View 1 (cartoon, rainbow, N blue to C red):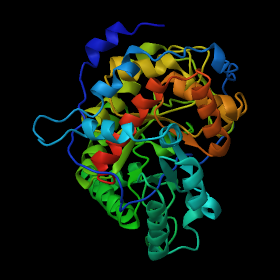
View 2 (cartoon, helix red, strand yellow; view 1 turned 90 degrees about the vertical axis):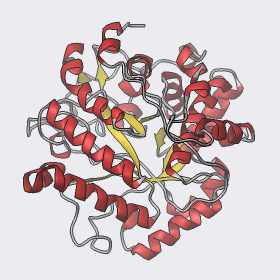
View 3 (spheres, rainbow, N blue to C red; view 1 turned 90 degrees about the horizontal axis):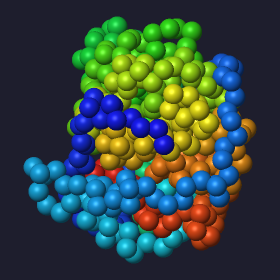
Length: 417
């Protein structure tokens, strides 16, 4: 595997997860989900076919086998029991089905949501715009409450409420008089003070509905209006984007709402992976000097999770999309020393679905190093992962390492006791 030793020098900033809390049952919050709006047609060179899961490395890496020992370390100033210790306690009482289910952040299916909780034990639900149509604050609050009551392990409940072109909740006047503005428009109107106020208002709205994770901020560096990602980005160079990301994460952390840095390792000028494969041929140095900086800033500010894109980044892995690439995940764990939750972008997006069968993509994503899989076809993928666990393709230690990180996240957010 490719070495990234020189990046250690640049990013030697160990990240500790702060902690302290106690028991399992109730939750007073809500559910999440990930995919984003598509824009233009893919113009990449097309993804190489993903590897056969049986041919991939199934033994956990040193980072994975030590995750139970390192995930959720107690902050020296926080006192009390560590989240890691509580997570390990909870893990010891979970069935294989519950463990695997926790690794899936799935698209909400309103018609079968309660039944899906009983059958698949998902780690969380992600809501999209249609889920808020014809609803009110009260009805959504009660709906999410019913999901939490039905789930023995409290759920992550998420949305993409970025502002601008991606507003799942505020696009409806039942929830806000007008949609949240884009980061670019906010900054033009009021600088970082406007960004801070906007972040606080989003958190208050979402938490009030029972939503405990906002899949934001967008960390991608883009200054070209022709880029697919431009309108969703801060629209400025890496240093300014890093300042934006740091500002947002600090506010989200204060409000105690879950955060997600996306789309690692940086989207660049790539085409829309919702509609097809995209290949990024930039030199690795470009990421070091630019794209990595906002992600680093977000991690230093205490971001909970990182979402990995489906772009094929040839300077890191010429064969696999970043979301399925062990090399890309090694950068996050070994070079950035990130100890939080790593998740895929939605595995139902065409960049993955057109190249890899549903029964394979989830297993490959876990093998690569993801903790949480954003999934629409979870009723196919969860059984596939269980089968891989039963036949030895995936090891229990690998699953446990991810579940520990997910439980620690829930403990930190206060939705799990």
